Image 1 (tube, rainbow, N blue to C red):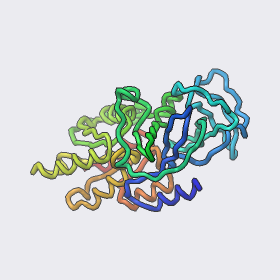
Image 2: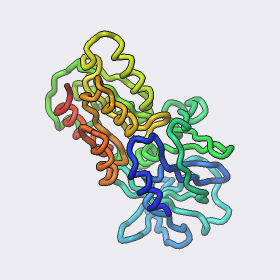
Image 3: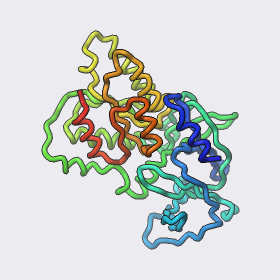
Image 4: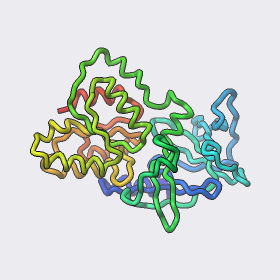
Length: 306
């Protein structure tokens, strides 16, 4: 069922919808984009080997389908009580940022197809401050489902797996430019790191947008100023997963707009794989690259900026 659901939504382009897998930990409801999930494994069916000197939230490793996977106890990471029947718990095997991991959760409820417009940005005061764990809150069938920032969890546990700003140094000496670059990114942590990296690369005029809708509204406002459009924005970098409007929908709207369609759009996402690359190409992406390859992103900006 999981594979059929993933293929179903990948066949469609720019619908501004996603499939989320709802799961629970200690009766709390959470969600993950199905595009990040490769399979589910019963926790009690595998032998997890503890690793010495590992992160306290890493339970160990196990072998599945010929690969060694690290098990992250998601409940422990979030400070929630353990399961009463651990053998019946589930491991969500994920693939994103070119990393395969196993997240230990208590139960999988169902898969829901919802619109990004129904996902609200969480209140930072409630959900862990400016760089909290929740990227969105979805209301479904009378309950709230918290969409988790799994990229942040991986970066917290293994910093080397995240964006490495030091990589910009290998690009050599660079001149500064005021050409405006727009960034649509919903994760506060990743937004901060991306901006720091591209400013280090010399792009000093970054227009920050928290999601695709905010980016689209800003682009529309630029059209009404009477100033040359591409002096106000010379290139757009966009994530795919974002509340209100995702990156694919944003790209679709840009390519359908007579004044905006020439704008270079780079998709920078943890979800880039063969299927997602094909979807982005069909929608007219200028380039696509997987997080956390920040130096390669800068090289693409250099190549395509107007």
